[in-house]
Image (cartoon, rainbow, N blue to C red; front, side, top):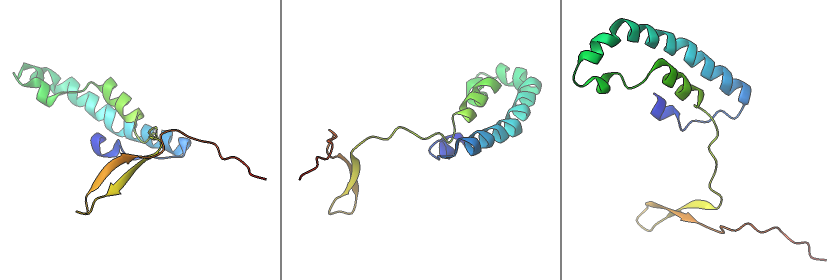
Length: 102
């Protein structure tokens, strides 16, 4: 879930914060309970890191980082090639301010 939604953005700060809190209040207590009950069993498994990658605190931190706007790269674009595929490109890396002509 995190990987997919980490690219989503909620521009409204209040809505973003409330959404993150609902996710945290829904998932973290259940995960914490699971880890308290089954964590010791999972840790005995030789491949435990495959099953228990996160602590409850790290999940909470991850969920709090969801839906934030990402810094945009200025001047980037995607150019369509004759094959129909897109390539990344950069145009006008340096910003100029318009000048008034009288």
